[in-house]
Image 1: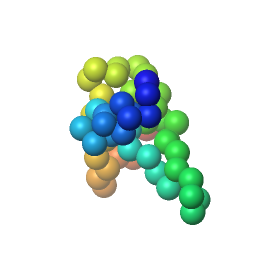
Image 2: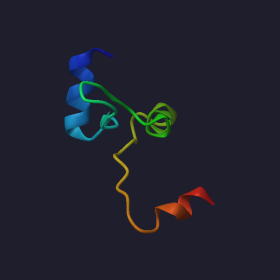
Image 3: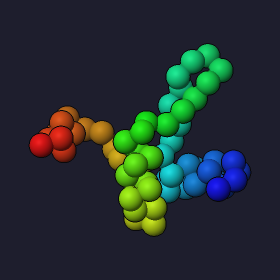
Length: 57
């Protein structure tokens, strides 16, 4: 995908948002990208709550 497509999809909520990793750098959580690759059409930004730890079990 092109850079502009990625940023458009981030704005739409259909691609994982970047996280800041340094003053001038940003990246993605590998787990978010893996979830997107597994289901790009059905992917939606995961909203974190107090019960997220249960997803690990």
